[in-house]
Structures are given as C-alpha cells and as structure tokens.
Image 1 (cartoon, rainbow, N blue to C red):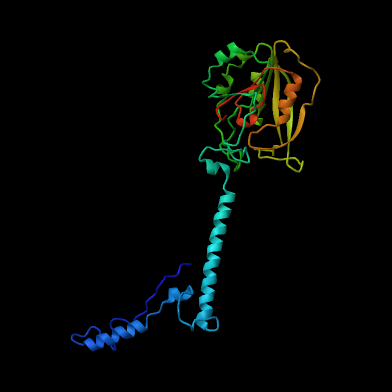
Image 2: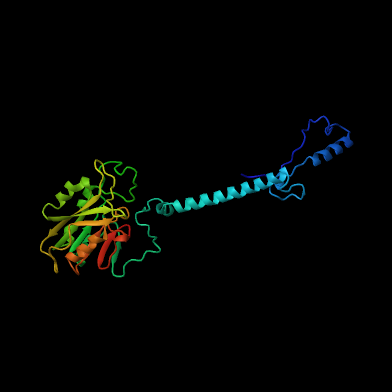
Length: 306
C-alpha cells in the first residue's frame, strides 16, 4: 500500500464563499487563498510520522492512525521481501539455466562446481554424426553401455513429468555402428517398456541376460513412476555378448537385480557400473549417450550433454 507524500484538500472553485473567481475582488481572493492554505492537510507526512504537530501523539486518534499506517507499511514491505525469497528458493534449476535445462531433481549439479573424474575420457559430440570409424580404429571395447533416448509411445505418456532431453526414432538408434566398436565383448542396453520388442530384435543373436533395477525412495520404499497401463517401479537393461569372452572376464558375479535409490531423471544406478567393472576387471569401457553424471575413471563417455 503506497501513501502519497502530500494530499491537498481544497474547496471547489465554485464555492460561493470564496469569491476567488470574481473580477476585481482582490481581498476576497486573498482571504480565500489563506482559507485554502489553512485547509491543506499533509496526510502523507502525518501518516509517516513526519509532522511537527505535537497533537499527533499516541494518545490522539490521529496519532493512533499514524502508528497503524506506519505498521501497515512495515508489514507490507516484510511480506514483499518474503515473497521474493520464496520465489527464489522455489525456482527450479532448469528455470535458472533457461529453456532445455535439466531438472532436477535430475542432476542439480552446477556446471562450474562439477569436477570430472581425473581418469575419465569425456567426448562431447552428437552421437549421430560422430566419427565412430576413427574411434573404432583406435580402440576395440570390452564393454559398451547405452541408454538410448527411445521415442515414447504416446504424446503425453509421462502425465505431467517433463522430458528434458531429445528423443530419437528407432531407426537412428539402430544405425549406430556399435558392431564396429567391439570384436569380442558385452553390450548393455537400457530399454523402456514399449521398446522391448525392438531391442530384442537388435540383440536377437547376442542376447545372454538382463538386469532389473528396482527403484527405491530415500526411505527405501518402492518408487512407483508413471506408466500407460501400470505404474512402473523398475527399469530393465538387456545384456548381449559378441564373439569370445573379453580378457579377464569373470562368471557368476553380482546379481541380476539392483535395488537402488531413484535419483535424477534418466540417471541410472551406480551399481550397474560397479557390476560391469566386476564382470570385466581392468577392461576397456565405452558409454554412448552419456551425461556428466555418468563420467567414471577409465571409461570413455560420448554424448552431447557432457
């Protein structure tokens, strides 16, 4: 609430007593001017306690009104400051970063504060146009991990959950030259429910196993997400093998079920990386469609969000 510094209350110019618009009546005009001056009320300054009038103290009606108006102004300023603080605290990371940023929840690390592991090999590139032939000529990998941005089945499958990354048609994912990158080794591919059939077609000749990630909350309860028919509380990673076992490969290790807390959107559990490194110790590891939270020592990570 904004109060004017000064409100002047005067009689109308048509006041019959003033005679201020009568020709040749200077005495009447002077008298009217003096009367008008006496009727001037400095309401704004009085309300703010700036008047020198000794009658405006806390024991008079005007003094109490002044005190209440001053208190009202202080409360309004306090509420406005609190509203600004609440808006700043509730603002999501993607709002601060601009359109196309991540959520949250999904990876709230600030880029300036993020430090990549010392021995990781991040390659920021568009996986659809990257020179895979040159990479394949330099290194053949023992393990390849992929988390493709599968195209969802419907236009609004997430029911209010924003998707912060670009989705790719199946044909784009199928045309990735993965066979060139490994002569003997494993491939791990995360799939979504409506892409099981497509993923199995891709791995028909090499499928050997699968891993189920049961998502949990911070309280170790099952974290149910949105689904078209059923609520989803798990994700599946298919495992394939090409050629012979890579060097140092171990058998019958770990488990095909991971119980782990759900973190950011599309952020997969760290236990999977640990399982891969236990399956093929000291191996040559490649992740495609990686993000900065996926970077690990001794891994090559390719993605356009690094």
